Length: 524
Image (cartoon, rainbow, N blue to C red; front, side, top):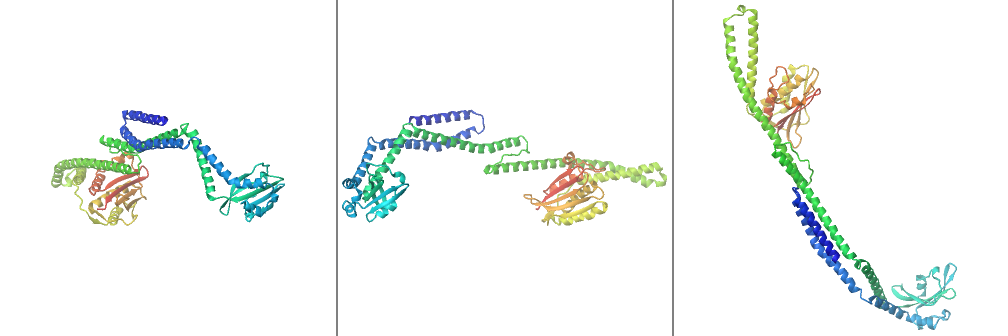
């Protein structure tokens, strides 16, 4: 008992030191782990320690009570008394009639003997010599001694056999001249039952004695109880630690992710894997940061676009202010001077000046359109038909390059501004044609958007020279162009139109292998 109580106290003190050291740590979730472990230990040990103490005490005290002094001897004497009383009839018969040759059925019946069987050993065989009594044949079939049993016996001994659910006492007479004689007579059932009960009690007493000498006197019961307490405490602590770690890891990952987002890093993603509610929370967080990052990019792009639109508006205004007197002066010269009056160099200079003025006027108009792009007027349109119209419009201007329109499946209905969307397609297809070599093909591919982005995707793919990653990153910035004589406003206008429709535009290009620009539009 002292061992159990001391070991339990040592366990409590050990966990107390462990919890103290853990709470002193600066870990964010150390206190939560301490509380969770304390809860598990409380639910495990509070009912277990008293129960084990009670069981061990009960086993110890009950064993002491059952192992009363002299109880084993009393049981053995009782068993001997039953045996002697049961054998009295047979012993008296064998004493009065020691010679089996004088036995007959009448003699057996007079002395209460039901059966008598005599065997002879003949080498390695055992032969039946005689059988007296009505049921002796049953006995000879039931009991035939083995050759190894034949030893000289000076005293008789007995055993109990069962013949057709009736109990008989079987006594063996002394072996004489290689003859073994057996006699049998019935026993009352209560005598047999008492003999069996006392035998069982002796076995239990012997087991209790062994247990007392091994388990109790050597404190094995208390050691086993203490061992169970330590095992349960360890399992409870491990389970609490595992559950706490399963909670701490995703929560810590969420905290780190939120700190990164608070610092302005919207590209932060949580890679911690979880399959329970924390997994849903982590997925929601990643989705939120992805949406925030995308919205920030859209906002920055809109701010840059608005700034460029303001610049385009001012440039268009300044160009038109400068072109107005130049155009008026050119008209005045052409009106007052005939071509024959002008020298050839002056005439060439006037033509060059007029050509550049027209180019500047077109540039000013382009800037003006970029600055005043109207809101889309959406209506239900046939996207495949619109792509086919663009093909028919541009194919004659690029006879050496093919244009193919293909749909992977029947595209869903789409509501969009047909004129603005047509302008998007013209710009993208024209860029692909200009980047392609003669004999190449520009593909316009229409398909449904992949889940969860329900909508329509239009991909314009060419096999041109492609673009470097640096150019791809700045592809949609205004005034950025890789074409000679380009204004750098075409793709900026395309991006603005797509965004005004609530869609997205992305580019996938490999230098030397071509470019694919994908426009996704929602199905609203």
